[in-house]
Length: 293
Image (cartoon, rainbow, N blue to C red; front, side, top):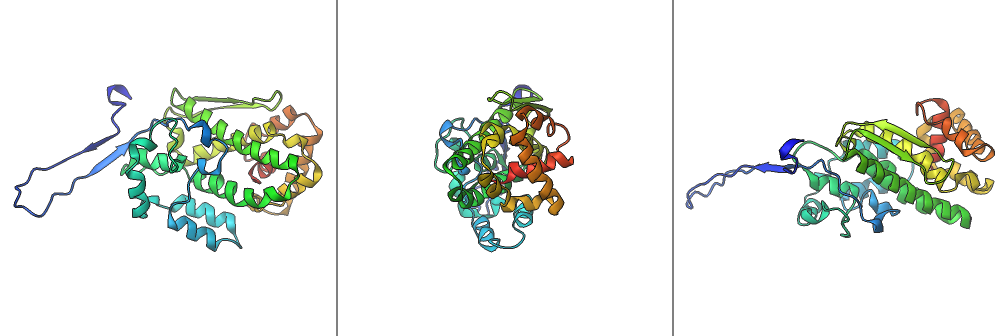
């Protein structure tokens, strides 16, 4: 980025006589592509992705308690402009210097909010993943599913949430140093993946970010103990509404069969089936398990 890489915004000002009451408009913007590390204390919490401060989001959640939940949330997250809520924008802007610092522990910090504070008036939007896959499924279906699981299943849900966010942090941090991202499971046999994303661009390319996040899902879910779950817990996970993303009953059937294969085969073989093209049938099947939070 050259010698100006620390410049996060520019502004222009105009001098007018004191008696001149019509003030000139001053345009201000910021575009800081450096993604600060999240505080350890937030890793594993749904608010890591987004904090439900904006009224538009809360109204949406109330309206989609039934029906095509996934399609509604996905469309909303893609088109939503969080800056339209002036009260929340002002609240965050008053803490801007805090929210863009590494290891921020403000009660208003989230990946979504931090992005907003680093990209003001520059046209960049937070990845839709933060609101849709991240916060919505983590909070809504995580809360509904967890009480129905066994103690072991509940531990898996908590651990999966932790690993999902830890691997997201690793990818974002690696992209600050160069175009190569390599994530290796902390559990022997759970796999790894690599991808190339232009330096600083991971968080700025919505589809690329979603692809990256999806690639972390197998590692996170397997590291959390997916292969050790009992049939009762697995069945409850498979019934979660997140599966509607994957199409008709044939995809769901394949997802269940693939999920059972994860338990019956080596974890390494299960990962080999998904580490290539995520859009292939096997990838989609295990992907259904990955997104059933």
